[in-house]
Length: 114
Length: 112
Image (cartoon, each protein chain N blue to C red):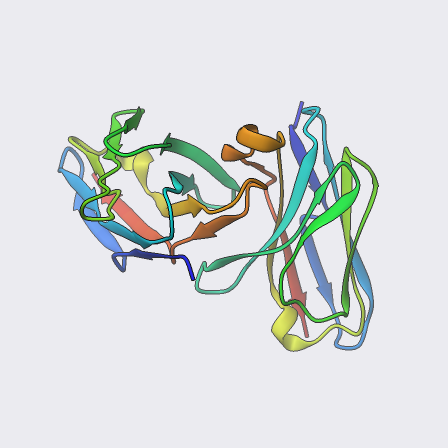
């Protein structure tokens, strides 16, 4: 059983399109995250939700909108895709509080914008 | 603000060689420190962690000691294997919500 699963694993699309990436965790964690990894492997947090409530919202274009229907799911919707959005997007989850020390990551979703 | 600086890669080693990856940090207070590893085509996995000064984290033959006086958390392994080829990320946690600040990552390539 995959602890943190993301779909799709690969996504190739044209500029201007809208796309979504879905994430689900079966660990019973309260907190979920989206990280972006660029072509140089640099990782940066985008968003975090705790029990469906947004708690971290880094400086990200408002074309990116996270949605958490319940604490086991955190989806990422991207409008009007741009070339610079090409990256690997990682979902992660953790317990809240001191348990947030340890993040469990999904395998990543590689987005390529043409 | 807080930041993490790692040595640049790639680091290329022969099997059974000694590995050191330097990591230094800048932070207010006393953050928790981590090493995560990313194998090709996979997500990141926690390798080890230390939550206070002088703590030593260890796992799978890797070790790192939280040095407050030098603000460092260097990763070491005495004898690497080809299976250790991966990208290694040093990170610190600077708040209670698990917001990790990552270093740029260091690619390690171990040849037979």
